[in-house]
Image (cartoon, rainbow, N blue to C red; front, side, top):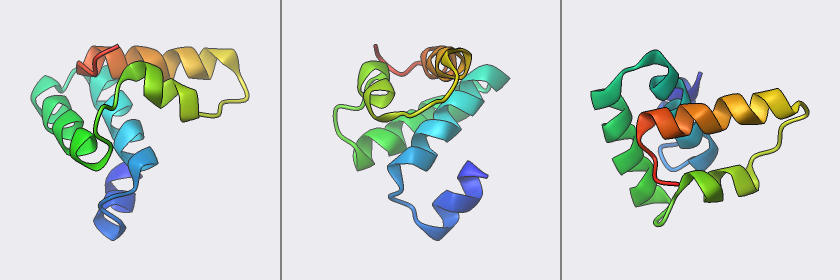
Length: 77
């Protein structure tokens, strides 16, 4: 879904963050590194902390899952 969104609007930062988290959980390190690079070109200074600051989750466990994916993908804290 994130990739489809990015095909329609390449600068949509929330889709970049979702893609990074998903790739991190999938263990696709090379793809995750590319996604981090693209996301940081759209949102300079993007970190796990800054991504979490704008993320809205109803359940704390979803927030934790998102954070873990970002870290697994190599997004700096």
